[in-house]
Image (cartoon, rainbow, N blue to C red; front, side, top):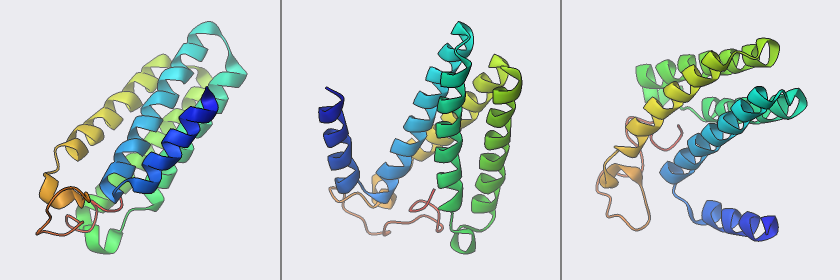
Length: 143
């Protein structure tokens, strides 16, 4: 079953616009944090740390993809936010504080909400007419 899911995910990634890829990464980070929270509650420390590490890797990937030259202040603010989220998640690995997981979840949901609100003309989706091109201030394409 997992094999079919992986094929579906690979296909979606191959066909996704840069905008959709960022959405998928944000969703992936939220998923890993949710699984990690369940692991904390069950005392499954090894599994918890594995999922936190995945979430941190996803967030760091978003951070590395920022175009600070084109994105300016917005990209720098996102960089700072992603850095903060990563540090908070690493703290969870140390002290198992569920409030920190909830805080990072809330922050990611805010970013995702803003990302989801980007108009179709800016997203660069293949199925959406785009007069503005695939970027918005240099960050819509990167994160």
